[in-house]
Amino acid sequence: MSDLLRNIIRLAAFILVQVYVLNKIPHLHKLVTPYIYFLFILWLPFTISRLGLLIIGFFTGLILDYFMMTPGLHAAPCLLIAYVRPFLISLL
Image (cartoon, rainbow, N blue to C red; front, side, top):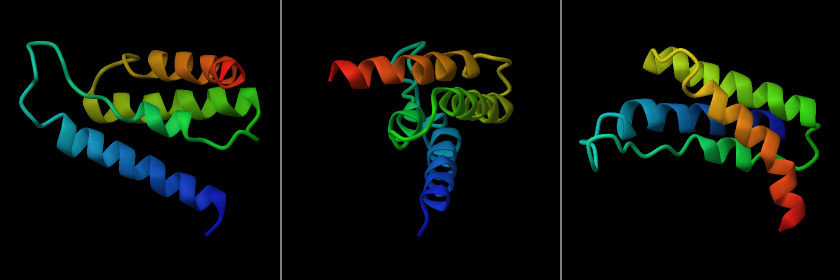
């Protein structure tokens, strides 16, 4: 299986689990909902360029914003994680 197909399946799985499972469970507290879709951005291959990583992060957030009807609430953190990821990898 190619890396592109594997990453597309991984994105679809994370989005489906987030939207249809984790958002339907009762909240742990009044404002706490577990989010796992950030793992998709963190698990992308290291060979992706910074611009490609930012574009993928933005579209990941937009897809989640579309399903959850929250304008920009998930796109901004995904962009931040995509931007900070190379710095974190170099530190580790």
